[in-house]
Image (cartoon, rainbow, N blue to C red; front, side, top):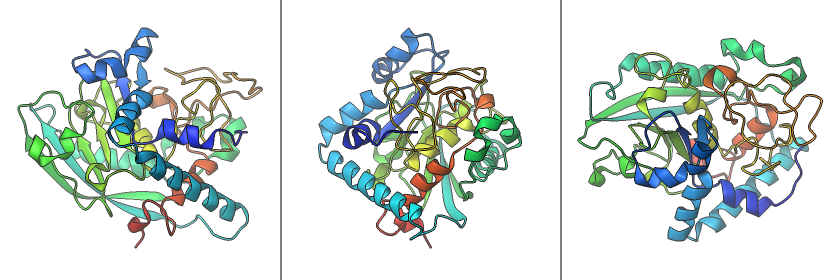
Length: 331
């Protein structure tokens, strides 16, 4: 079980933007070079640079800390109400989605079929109807949760660009910088599909940030499960992971050695898992069942992540409750 420790510190470590990288790609983006250094030095495939990006965001806007504190306080209050039976977290929430495609070549101008495949993956993963759900070890089946969130594609916006690498500074979200402005971000999930550079698969903005930049960015070869996709991240799980962050879910290891993801039913684990670990993988004294490495918020290959937990569902629903950072999404 997770310890209720270091609430403010953990929230600060986890807010704003999270980026994930594919170390098999060339490191072409200067900003991304430092962001992915630790993962590359460790020879790992899917790394993350949340702390590096957060550090830059906090330098630019110190007021983010107060927003983080408010979101976390509201989340904890909501969790207490759920536990006490004072509110419910059931009922399917429908989220409109706009996909913004920015491309510099034909491959990056992904097809309608590829876009729809990603929406289909999200809907299966967030309703616990994914075909690989049966691979969850019996030790964790009781924790498996239907997140009761469905995504509806409402529009696709396309824009050609001479820019071949966008980095993690949100330029793709700004028409004045050559990108595409967000569509109705208070009521719509915006997904930007573009080459981020630096081997980065995708990144997300947590609840509480600026509406103008709210949403998720994903590289075209990691979006969906058909068409221009690249193994081992070719099953659409990068979007599942990043939308999880957009829903206020933290990395399952808490971005620290034996850290805290603020979810009680995800076992404490030492660090991110990569590839496809064998069960059980015991770390941080979490035996006999070990890490929940098949959770979407770990870093395993797309084929080896296939569940959310009940605690993650409760945490994600807090942001849509009255007073939550994404309450405007409720009809």
